[in-house]
Image (tube, rainbow, N blue to C red; front, side):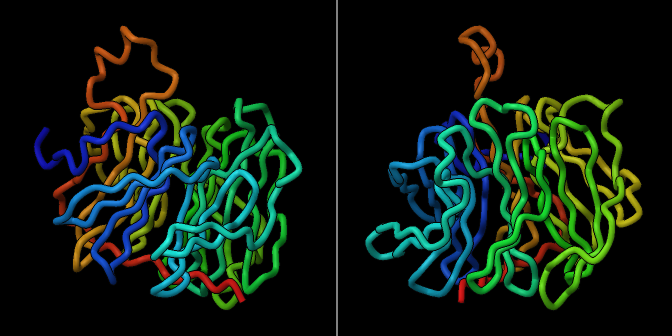
Length: 290
């Protein structure tokens, strides 16, 4: 497809949570259900790390440490050794749930979501974590997704994928906490596929991966659909800005839920792609854990 190429042909059952570290020019992402962390420099060799736990999102703490959202909570990863240390338990006593979509607010706070491992209705939540403090923001979530923020930190977006509604809520830019009631930003219920992961660029345009819709969609700050980019896989899952200028998009995908016949019809499912289209992206902030 025009403007879409394979960044990595490593196939993940559930590729998710891509995050680019500009200090090392490296993209990190996860195969959630198989407990794998994948890393690949833009011009380097791929590495796959066995975490031994389901994990779904990563953020940079400093040059030596990363924060990873896992099925037991937020864990600090030593970059040099790969060792994980539990920092803040989240639903650690509930074996039925796991982490899902997460992203760092411009102030350094983390919004992190959970969900049932079997997508049980209403089993998940979305939490706020900042400097060691944890609060539950939204409960009764079936599939937490699309967590992202405007560049100035005044707006947060999120969805419960099961609802088909992408939500928008005002935020305190200093803390990342909601300051108002959430309102519908995009009603996707009449469209093909489901709202999955999203990022917001410097112009306030929200880029969303449409699970089951074989597309990435871009929405203006007022919710107007600006463009739709066709993807070579049925289940694109989440985008991330990459490159020295954050001017390209990487998009993960998945084959989860497909039988052998369906996988043959979707042979690149689970690969990670590069969209060589002009975007005014921005780098992820570092997360403040204390």
